[in-house]
Image (cartoon, rainbow, N blue to C red):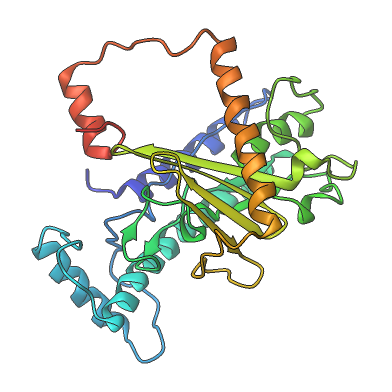
Length: 304
């Protein structure tokens, strides 16, 4: 293709808005930008300057990384190189932002902005050697699970509890249904952020988990604390994120009340998930071709 994926997504979404905007029927558009995503390869001209580091140096690093086949893991980076690495990521953000701006402009131009809900979210963050590695998918530290959720819903205001509670991907569907005047099914785990009622205890925490490459971990956030449990080894990590937002000082094993309380919450969550699985009859075997397995393995979703 002559266009990047980001330009392709922007072009196709704008074209869809112009086509659908001429009709009377409601529409739903899902636009998925893969950038910003490793490998960080922003087009020239989008990398911002960092203090003392001109964008040209970041692009020199990009050339080096591409020549090495993007094999960052075997190349210990100097601190200045880490900043350049992050600059490339910021360049991809700027590139996507420009194309998303075109989508917002098309909404305005087609007269759709006043009755179209717009929700922006990402599925993960990226680590820049915050905990000794880079990329994503390997830990549950804040740099990977803190995410963006931006929403503009014409004619609706967010409930007073929304800014003071944790929100998650599971809250997006109930929010969209609420905006449309449809009562969300009671079995949904999430809650609309448009609700006017004060937050219930269920809204005061958020759970995360991953199972990848033979390792498994779960985490819970509440009241500024985070507990991470390695379910393979039983090892726990506890962080007071209000004082330690980068999760650098592990407070587990010190007998703090937060560790006991969050451990109970995580146990309840684990049992809840097991009950859900049992209610649906357990996992069903899937027949996958070797080609499909190889593809999923390359993405890190299937073990060796």
